[in-house]
Length: 136
Image (cartoon, rainbow, N blue to C red; front, side, top):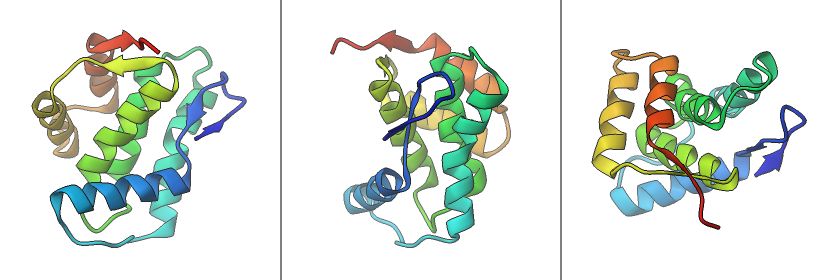
């Protein structure tokens, strides 16, 4: 994780994203591989760009951008929704929040986003409705 001047938020870095992908595939199977370094960079930059363009935006908006970046940029051969969910939850946890939703609920909303049934703002609204302060 790295802290950025854009609001003091902590964002995922390349090493964390690759570790999330590796662990997701180890746990659930799937083809290993990075499709594009540029796509990974775009996925990681998405929440930073949102934070810089929208000073004062909330954690739910940035968490949605984090997940959305991985789904829309599609940097990995397989596992984009699994990586997106873990990235979303890790972003929230590292910034003092937790997601109060089952994995099934999370995957349903991420599938809706992946199939363009909802946009990133709707994903942010869903996160906002399921976010809690962390107990750490």
